[in-house]
Length: 168
Length: 52
Image (cartoon, rainbow over all chains, first blue to last red; front, top):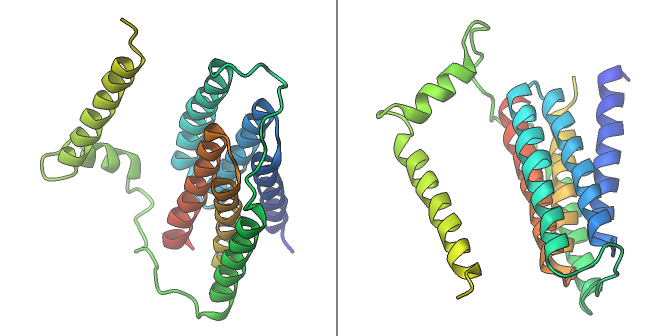
């Protein structure tokens, strides 16, 4: 077993453990901190998949912005730190059963099916993926319309949240 | 080299945990965090499939 496999297994166990803590911890602030650990594990997985750009985006956007947003949301919704919340619904055994069945089904499918044919074309090592991504996002022949639509959607959400929170 | 199925099974596990969180938690922020977990699992699948 190589070092990379050991690193992968360590990260996988860490991420799954942190994810379980996110959905079971009653303290919301602690759950947010476990979420940070789980997302960081995801970033390590992206590095192992040789996608360092995605890993950096994961750290900057998810750990930097989303986690801080969640912590602020917890603090601003009138729940003092350390307060225990109503944990889980009455249907939690059904939810656990459903999730376990989904996982077993997917794992069985992945292990029993032959290797998928979804292989990417081998790129020239000099091919600059980041530059190509940036050009595709703003070129008229590329993805400029979805990009601008996403921008307008985010702006509308920003203005909408201000209007909803406005007190006369 | 790590087999592709390991990544897919890891993503399936994180997705299932997130699904449990969405179905079983009461707090809306906890549900939001569970959805973030599911999104991470989807991203792992998305990156693993072309590069595996």
